[in-house]
Image (cartoon, rainbow, N blue to C red; front, side, top):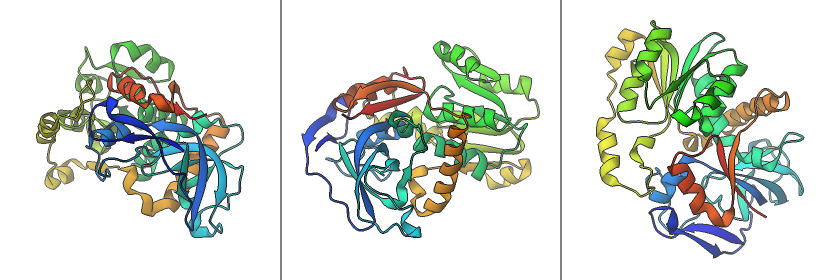
Length: 344
């Protein structure tokens, strides 16, 4: 099979297209012919060696795929997930090894697609929508009428969070750059904030002087401190990324990463108690021991898709061999929605 390999940590051009042995499914695994691959910011961090738990180079990056079951080495027991057969259209969480024509994945991380779902849509759902759903409703327990600030509201997780918020009757504040403001308004964001010219803290205080029920922040560094100021009593600050550590040039910079880490606040438990505030950390890649929980969440997401309540936004599709261009596209903040790698 063909696969995109990170031969060494670095900028997007470190990708190498290689011929590799086809994977052979072990007991409890499913062999999938890959049709589409979701590109996530976490993949960029993997390529640069900044993602926790990344393998040593060389390795194949990526976290989610969609495709067709070729064969299954599982009996379909409850612990293994649903019984799958050759020809089933599925999506899967791979935990690396996604940028390839074939993937062998534990059956418990494979999900059969709803009728009518395209492979490109399926590859855009698991990481983004599970991150948003888990943050907002499992960990955050948001209720209709609650107010939420979503940073990067035109990105993959951001769009998922906006759609889920609208479906559950939340009031949405969203940040994005100048060129993405019209998209935010059309997507149903109640208070679209251009972070290039407006202070989001001031906007929140203007329209929600008592503070919000939730802020979702994947930026890190100083942004965590400023997002914390937007949360009111009983509210939650969700942190699920550290994009401030990565510049638009796409090259790893330990100086930038260390500076961003130094700017990240420490949250005093006594002050959290005094303000009745929760700080929630979400890392989907560390939830693989909670497959039953994730499967239940994804079942709900798929039901919402089938009902027409949510629909992934595909920003751009690139051939598998052009993964470097796909990564650079995201580094330059050009995407509105999900970037997909297509496999023929």
